[in-house]
Image (cartoon, rainbow, N blue to C red):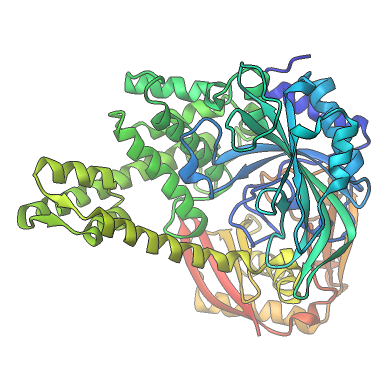
Length: 598
């Protein structure tokens, strides 16, 4: 059976692993709820971090699902045939159950028996070993036993065939990557992972180590985490060498062709970037990310503005929302279910997303006009444009360096490109340094500080509803570091000083009362009927973890009850003292609180 569509691939994958006794889990939000070590969910394993670390999963030890993901590290790579910012990742997981042999055999069986990919078109890479861990002979032998010849088994260093840890410390291990020959020509006998005709479509990660301050040690629980890219696999199954010619992108490309009056051929890079970035923007806004000048909002803003810049090269104006409309029909399972979802601001979901994209395009066009005035003034009064000035135009006004160069050339003056590139390099280094702070902390390392702050966010969520007397208040996002918590919620106005004090007082009272925090597993229906809170629009498995902050003085028997993967403290007394340090607006109808434990 040669699968051709996204729906077929996902259906067959889930069905295959269900037959292997795996339980299906739903796709989580693009905003990691329990792992602030990353801005976005970048892989299927992120929602599973507590269980990878040893916590029991409600559905058992063998899981399967498809996860929507955002990866920002590849933004500058987008424009070729295979890189994407937003993508879907099929995955199967073993939480201390099966390991290398079974995982590799499952992968091989699905590829050759279900997808009907010829064995002769496959190659694999495995970990070559280093001072931290030995050569992965075990995986290589399994592949050989399945008929993959030695010349198609490539041993690679840690940078290519090792995963993790997510933060500074934690689970990690070697992986084996599966490549498929995408060209219509006869496959080469030897696997060369640098040859673009070999496309990586699946990765089996074997978490058999824990990285500690002392170094790498054998993990107490060995886990398997696999990932198969839907976009790349669909291209391979359809005999296409360009992912953007599959049904996952073609409707968007055709809309860009229609609006621009230009053909895809000859404008591939520009159209790929626009299609990729607008698709990613739709999914990010759907998960409550809004354009901003920092963190997730900055990534979203950068994607929309980068799409606009490349749109200018195709003479496109006022086009982003029109292109975005074509995304919704490609993913009916995500958007038809959300059709009646109403935002706090009173618009249906699709209208909300399109309005936000259109608004950001208008803002950027005003910025470009401001930049145009500044560069014209520079040209009128200077005989050259310094790299620092060119970078200021780029960074502050979004003015593309190519446009600066074109205008300078028209007026027979030069741009100091060497200085511009140096300024750009310094900025990127600062951005990486700032981002590094995000990757060094958080719940991925299960620190006591983050566990306490995570429990405090649940208490804050409940305290806000009580003090503000508004049962419609819901969490709209959160981020926790070992130093502070950040909690976003829907509310139409600024909180008064008295209201802030009341929230603090209520939480500190419950801390003093030393309330027990209990974890239970129960069916989703029972959890919601019992009063457990949940994130609106989120998808949950049939059986969930519920954390209850008990309070026998309450009529319902608890202060707070939430569907959550954890982790949490055992007693509220461990939190000591709660203090709000800032309350502010982050978007229309969305407020943000930052708080600490003292």
